[in-house]
Image 1 (cartoon, rainbow, N blue to C red):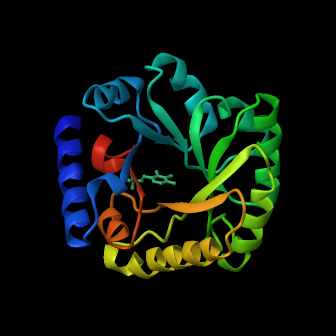
Image 2: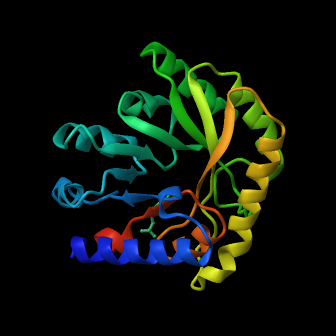
Image 3: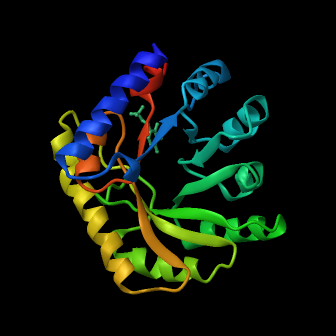
Length: 227
Ligand SMILES: *Cc1c(COP(=O)(O)O)cnc(C)c1O
């Protein structure tokens, strides 16, 4: 099942890239393995899938030692400050920097192990009251603050737009995140390159790619529904 699913997602990524005149190499597929057992992750890894996303620090901490060291772990979920220490030496990127305070706390832990960690700012692009993330109007200021932290390297923006049945409805939010990244890039802040846009999930990753996503986070479409 994982083989067929990965194949289908791959074909859909290729088609979306072709439609939008982009090269397949511009888009990284992150397989979101939250709640799924290490056996399934190993199966995907053996098929060549090396980027995995998790939304709980404890889950990364527990799965990491059981799996091959070449896997790349992406922290994509809400991160409490006291849990940064579980993942700081394990992740290749933290997508969910949702406040200046969290950036500061990551700086402290990264400094402790002398590592520079790539990060994205999570933007609450649709201004949903139920969601975390930085308000679009505060993203530039947060980018400036993050740029001053020597153990963080700001690489771009991430968003989780509303859950919708019709993917097209999220196009506007993906387009807005891209515009925001361009606006921040124009400021030419030292230590910041806005080259990554982490957006798009199982229900809407094709639209996200058409709007410039460089990282798509697909869980259900690869591993099946979560119970
Ligand atoms: C769970 C999750 C995903 C993947 O969702 P699917 O709809 O299963 O593809 C992507 N991003 C984040 C932040 C998530 O928490």
